Length: 274
Image (cartoon, rainbow, N blue to C red; front, side, top):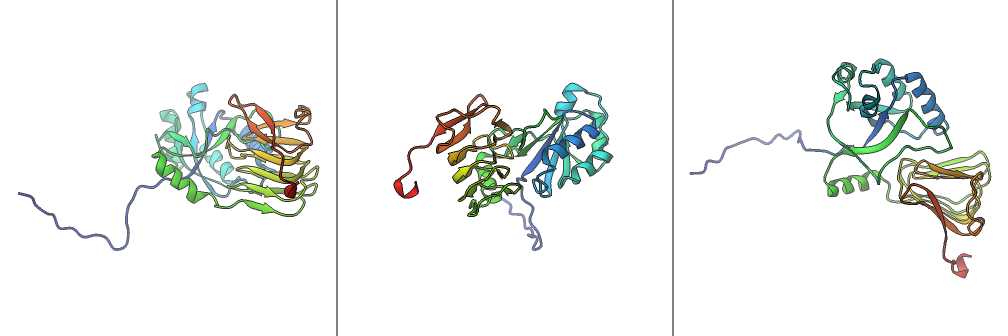
């Protein structure tokens, strides 16, 4: 005999599982003074790079090098908050490290971190020395369909379009989307995008695509003469020039499978776009 149990459904709330987009700080050194300097070097010239992003502190890289390293979370948390990050959780540390993190108000999590976009790597707009920390964009492990749906909801559906020249000293950052520039990017100017960069004019300044680690990002220009190009932290300056057959031509830049930068000529444009 089956028995049906009566129940009341709450009218004021529901509890469901959720997938939260997170930024992960892969900590490699307990030297927080060095961390502060390197964060300032990497993101100090892009003050709106983070926008109160929720953060997971991943101690696994540190634990692999210095298993008993002491992390002063009372100093680390305000440091990260000063860069517009919201530390919420910690993972990968020793019992002592995790206890200290929990005492500082962080949530202990054992979830594996899965990149929000293709394998995320450290972002490095200008050329910088190797950092003691990596910042990657990640989410908790979720089914592929849920992750794709979450991604679509987080990123704007349209690109940021700039129809004026980007002049020397100016910086344009398309946060969470592609960037389309309809006029010249002058020497000394900087265009940054978390996705692709399209310049339908000469590109003569600095172009940084995949700024948050999207290794599939590309840079397109009708005249490719940049001072610096960077995709997901892999950069090339005029010290390592582009191929002569590409320089000054309509071309695209993308990463190779081994992480190098390659450049390709774009097919000829129709006369009305020439």
